[in-house]
Length: 125
Image 1: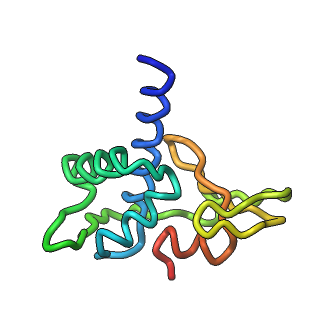
Image 2 (image 1 turned 30 degrees about the vertical axis):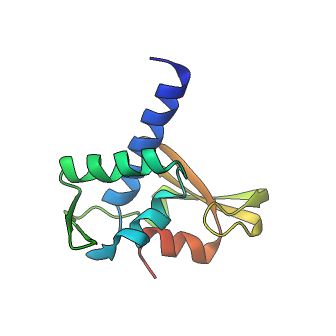
């Protein structure tokens, strides 16, 4: 496997972890893509992530909407979210941050996010 292929595979797994941990029952494809774009902005990879999420039973697609198949999976802010001080840029909105919030999944770490963006990305807002 080439380095690019390994990087793409890692991004797919990270995005699938994020989709599996969403705290919403339903969202539009556009809302799902907004979250996936915190991992990759590559349209081909985004389509692959959505297809794989459906194949693995993480989501169901119907009429431009996604229904999540939640089985008690969500981001545990106390243990999975790590705050780091530094000079960061939010992966969702691009704002400068002095404190970055990072989500730790089995497949890797995703972030940094600002305090409100991390809530939006996980579906808490």
